[in-house]
Length: 405
Image 1 (cartoon, rainbow, N blue to C red):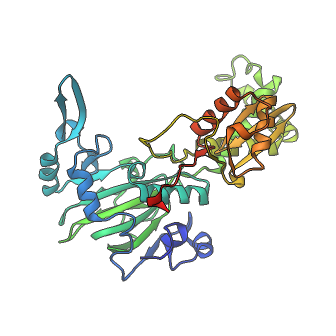
Image 2 (cartoon, helix red, strand yellow):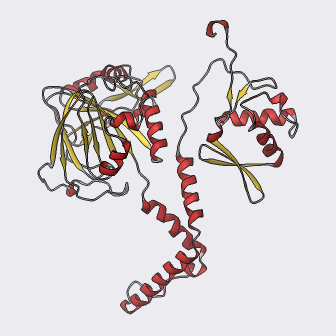
Image 3 (tube, rainbow, N blue to C red):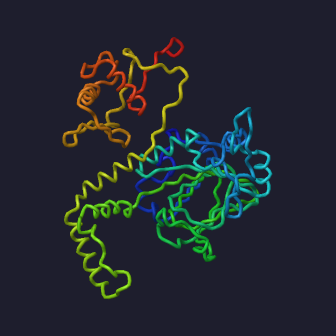
């Protein structure tokens, strides 16, 4: 097991990040054979996956069954449990799941990064590295069974073989780097021969660029693996900012000429005006503003991991000790006549006294509301501190007891 926390470099070790991006990213698959079956043991183990299924807490759709290229209806393997006046919906029926698994079904745990912290931390690290969101799914398949039929994914895929082994057949893409709106359809598969076949053993890794068709089977061994998906933003997504700017041009808000759809003699006029409009937009566009707006939306879409629930919470008071975030995590800026706080991809407008208070806070690492300048009265300061704690900007420093020292 690597000594350092899991991130991209650990995931693809011994291949360096520079070589990975130059040769493999969006280009060709990468297969890493490792002689360490426990390489991923601090991320998750087969026993962890068994416990997640057996304790019945992974409610549908956080647990699913699949076979023959499709998912089972949830009523096949879940039930509603009545407790007093309450109904618990989508509770896994572990016996049914085990029965279907013995018949060759794959058990899937979609979005497991949301509930299994080590995988959540890894996905957070990858999302920060790529600026493209990452998610994790887990899959368990019995021995001598087929997994999913040939298909491609519309996200980049890292396969982490946790336990057992699984054979992957990789086929040439039928569409190069499909956009997430270009989902796979069975008609896209024409029965071609596999380009590459690899068998993943515990500790191995396989990277597949989106669009590469693949199918899986197991031999005499079961398989447990995790896929890390990277859902990328594309140049086409960025270009939507350019098209959105068209609405600011009054000429482009005028109606197309009457009869444009059926009078072929209008086609040259449409083409001429379209080209002229593109030239006009290109000349007038504020590209820096478009990039900034797109980047701001990407940052805002990054959902930060929430602080854990604490039973010993207390209401923030004048003498509460509060921790400021690292200075690189936020910015206090001015947009025209407005003061703004940028934090975790979100921009908050700051009234004058609030901006002055935040400026004073930015010089501190730890603070108490009662000791801040009186730009706001104490009730205003406490309200601000509570709001900043709610959004994760401030954290409460807790007293250290003798047992913690």
